[in-house]
Image (tube, rainbow, N blue to C red; front, side, top):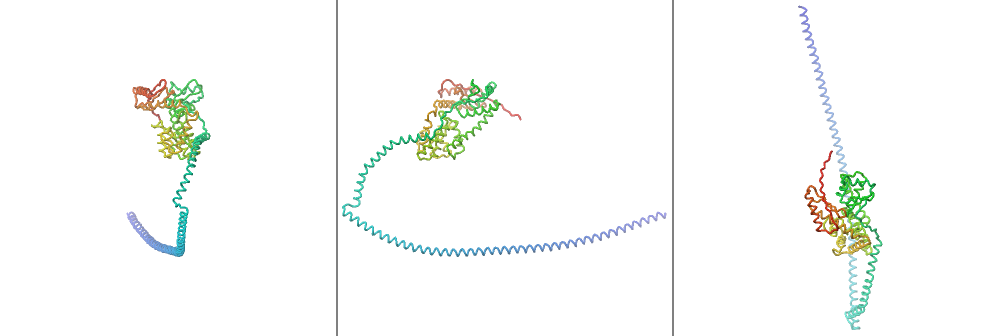
Amino acid sequence: MDNGLFSILLLLVGLLVGFGVSFLLSYFRMNNASKKVEAMINQARKDAEKVKRETILEQKEEAHKLKLETDREIKEKKEELKESENRLLQREASIDKRDELYQKREATLDEREAKIVMRQNEIQDEKSKVEEIKKEQLELLENISGFSKDKAKELVMSQVKESMTKEISQYIRDAENEAKLTADRTAKEMIVSSMQKYAADIASDQTVTVVDLPNDEMKGRIIGREGRNIRTIEAITGVDLIIDDTPEAVVLSSFDPLRREIARVTLETLIKDGRIHPTRIEELYDKVSKEMRQKIMEYGQDATFELGLTKFEPELVEIIGKLHFRTSYGQNALQHSIEVSELSGLLAGEMGENVTLAKRAGLLHDIGKAIDHEIEGSHVEIGVDIAKKYHEDEVVINAIASHHGDCDAHSVIATIVAIADALSASRPGARNDSLENYIKRLSQLEEVGNDIPGVEKTFAVQAGRELRVVVKPEEVDDLKAHKIARDVKEKIEETMKYPGTIKITVIRETRAQEEAR
């Protein structure tokens, strides 16, 4: 019992002692913390005071620097103003000196003017005295001779006129006779001289082109299974392919040189490529047609470069290049235009006219032939419209309009172009009348079908013995295709004259095409 009580007492005493110790420790700790906080606050106050002092010093230094800089700028401005003031003073002094000099010069000029007026008065007085003396002398001469001045003048003039009339008439008559004798000779010499200076090769265009083949087996590939390849070529190019017994050769026949050239390049490319089927033929035809435009531009540029002419619009150069694929009585239109241009330049040089303008008019005189198959009207009217569109000189426009006598020539150059055109056309072998008539007949044959609604394009083949009419399948059905063939037949019989018979073939082709990806 006593031990348990003693243990409890010890426990209570331990608790009291522990509580007291912990209280003392807490007290000491709080005391130390308070001191630390107070010390930190004091330190912070000291730091703040220090920062405040430093900030004030910096602001004072900055204000001092700003004041120094402001003083320096003010000083510089004062110096600049002082320099400007000095310059103005110097300029004012200079102006004063110049004004003084001008005043002295003005005074000198006034003195000279007074002297000149005085001298003029003296001269006028002398002149009046001379006139009086002259008048007295004339009156004395009239009294001595018994003739007045006007009467003497009339008498002398009548004698001179009578003596000179016969001589003048004789001179005029002799000059006219000499001019008549020499005019024809001079004109012929000028034309012959110009033709001798320009001597170009003569070559008539043909209506067929021969394409060489690597072997005779290629003919079968060109024809294709059941003739589908050759039909495709003829349908899209409008050119007739003639495959006969001639070894290793195929003949392309067409009156249109542009079609024939496109067909030739297409066929040669197919032969080199080796893949000959309808789809490939159409692809190559489209590609060659696009490339042909660049070739046309090259023909036009070569012609202007050869003639030394510049400042042509690109569209006009392209139209000039198209002349390469047009013919006039078998004569290449571009070569004919170049020849006329050269002859016009030579004749203009002989006559002292503008050579460059004459060459330009000669080159463009037949420009309407390049597109006369696309636009209604004569090649003269079309050529005048083209020249006006591209702002050509009035002399060039008149030369184009008058070179066939459709209107009067208003300049020497227009007459020269007409002469050069006649010279170029009349050279031996330059033109072929039968070939031109043949080409005109084929052109007229194609135009018959193009006027009918639903017709896409028309091709004359087999030397005009067959007309192939390609129609639009979405607009023309099978029954209407037969009607179109009959209408074309009746129109040809009514409007054209031709030897033999002409076969009309209407082609209506429908294709369904998809692309697998």
